[in-house]
Length: 292
Image 1 (cartoon, rainbow, N blue to C red):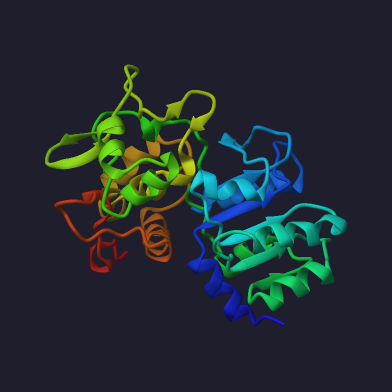
Image 2 (image 1 turned 45 degrees about the horizontal axis):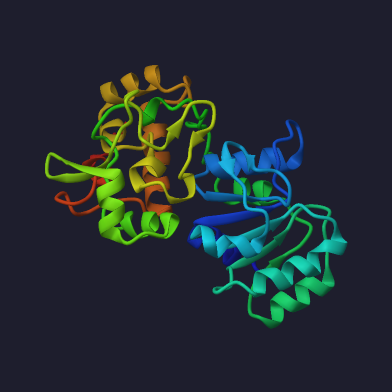
């Protein structure tokens, strides 16, 4: 049996989650969990044998496709009946790298799948809801912000900095060498590398009605919004962002927002340190936050 302290550490370490059985189905558990995990800051890859997308993200048809898409899951979350779990476990173990967690959602148990994973050294969770467990460990994580996928943060030239940590992720996503990714999709502005915009003024990869077309590989500044330095340390900047972004809670105080934002940046390792190559919006220290 896994101790809760160990499970919490794994959820902090994890960045990428593959959801098997993902689909847009308002009111269904998979819908709630998928959108919650996206709002909580994880990279999510929907996996479904038929559906082409879920929650605005392109879906993989099987676990076997994930390496081709440059997606190595830290958690594999199953919304499948018990009889399919063993087969999915074998698919997961065939990946180049094993995940941290093999998670069977509430109501799902498979001793066979669990035994395979345990033998391979992969932690197993059965019959528990990933969203419920995450909310227990990280209360208030999404109280001040819940992404509405409106695209407002994707508009405007020069704001999406591509730092040293972002470029390898983009290369893996496009399966292209760094120099080609830079030529095709970026430009230099104010001494930094940024994603180019389309003729509509939005990021090249934002599609109206569909959202971000490179969501699993998006740069750190995209993952961090709206927890930017200006919004965390300056109340006026926070108020302006709240007016513009429908996802920011209208009832949250600046201090509540700032504390949640700092926790989010630290736990998902989004804070930056090099002002010359990384986004200034991600460089923030604890002592800069509002105290009252």
